[in-house]
Amino acid sequence: MADIEGIKILNLSSKKRAKNLSKKYDIPLINSKSAKTFISMGDKSILHFENNKLENSFIAGKFNTRIKQHQSETILKKAVGWQSSVQKHILDATGGLGHDSFILALLGQKITLLEKNTGLCILIEEALNNLPNLPYFNNARDNISIINKDSRAFLTSAEHFDVIYIDPMFNSDKKLKRSKQMEFLANYLAEYDDPSIDFYQTKFKRMVIKKEFRSSSGIKDDPAISFKGASIKYDVYL
Image (tube, rainbow, N blue to C red):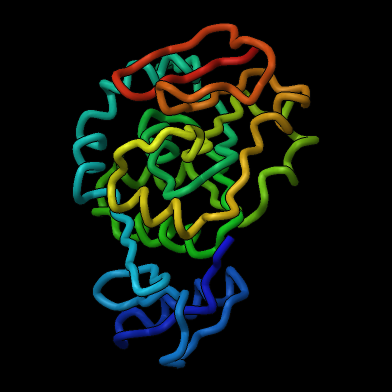
């Protein structure tokens, strides 16, 4: 799995923020023109990898539509057992770009987001940092804790969470049409592995696995229930 060599500062206004992230994630600030995999921080924060670029925003592009319609995320709500009067503590074991975690945080859930790739953690941090100063965004930001670790470090803690949420992302062998963002991730996370089976062997309370609709399960047992959308499904294990 690729990871960043460091952070490049492109303007003075981003210097303090870059230094804080450098310290938090124990990665250097760099100036080298030879760096191939890095985060640049200027007017935007961008992940660079093999001459390709990836941005992450919670208020732009297609994901912004999901944000505006987050109360209509019916099958996601059903999958995690959402209740308006109850705040569940959800462990997102495959944080990625943090999109599903942010939707769940907007829905009032408490999220511990695990992502072992430092570059992706910083993109999530920046997406949260760049949210408008509005109460519902501030509450959602407060509901998310980002931890830069392999989720398997939490296997013995699985039973302490109400829901284990896993999105393996690349769980179909079929050649499916993907967005440029997903194509970038497929190359960047070339050695990505799926922790579903590991968590299935723990004392979890509820485990939700998000899948491409036509993908097969790596778990031998059938889920207790599946919630199906047009292109994805959520398999729920109890």
